[in-house]
Image 1: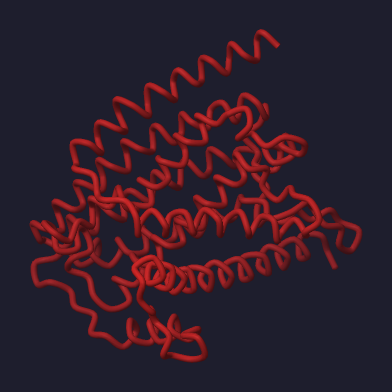
Image 2: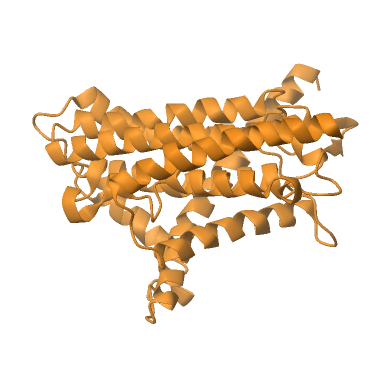
Amino acid sequence: MPTDTFDIMLLLAKLTLLYGLVMTAAAYLVLAERRVLAWIQDRTGPNRVGPLGLLQPLADVIKMLTKEDVCPAGADRWLYYLAPAMAAIPAILTFAVIPFGPPLTLFGRNIPLQVVDLNIGLLFFLALSSIAVYGVALGGWASNSKYALLGGIRGLAQLISYELSMALSLVPVVMLAHSFRLGDIVAAQASVPFIVYQPLAFLIFLISIAAECKRVPFDLPEAESELIAGFHAEYSGMRFGLFFVGEYINILVLGGLAATFFLGGWHGPWLPPAVWFALKVLAFAFLFIWMRGTLPRLRYDQLMHLGWKVLTPLALVNILATGWFIMVL
């Protein structure tokens, strides 16, 4: 088989497998959240569709696909239809650079367990996270609704604010690994994960990704008490479902990145590397669900104060401290 043909087929196989795994995991993460929240609130949760309620995600998809897809009369149709895709696609593409395990040898070739092994993988993630902002902004603006517009403006300001602290928290990781490639960052943690050296950066990154996911206590763009449903208030059917799926894919993506940057990625004893990576991602997903069932929502001024006056200065100080530490040692 010619090399270029083999590479193309391998890439298509990776993309197909990745898309299937991500969409399935996102669907069952919704079910897991509903069951965990029910456990926290001392109730049953969904358990009627299939054994133990395991077919509930399929029922939800069928419901979304068969519901009427309404477009408001005054909406900007092209942007209205584009916004849900802008919310979901960047999250899926980010998975392409995350390594799930060590490279495998197949047909005499060294094959990395990631779709694309970019030497600027971290910058690729930051670029896609900035593009995801447009899904929230366009969804709120194109709906021609004041409630949706206010939710979009809130989301835009929030995502830009916490994207800065998130990016700054990763600078010490690059300084320690001497690389932007995610595989090199994981390899640098073969003996000691970076959370040991950078607990403050990890805490800043964790808070920032919770805000990037628009999760409690940072779910101000979707504050139902004053904005109905925020930026996607006018969406229905599967277009609303895409916003919904995009949020849960983002949880998995950012959990995977947190594991990659601070917890050693796929490194771990006894179990297979891919299993270790999956367990770490699921641990972050459980943490986000637990936060939703436990913490109250912040006020918007508290949200901005935390991002600009606390996390960003702390991240800058941490960069200086890391540089001093590297120079001294």
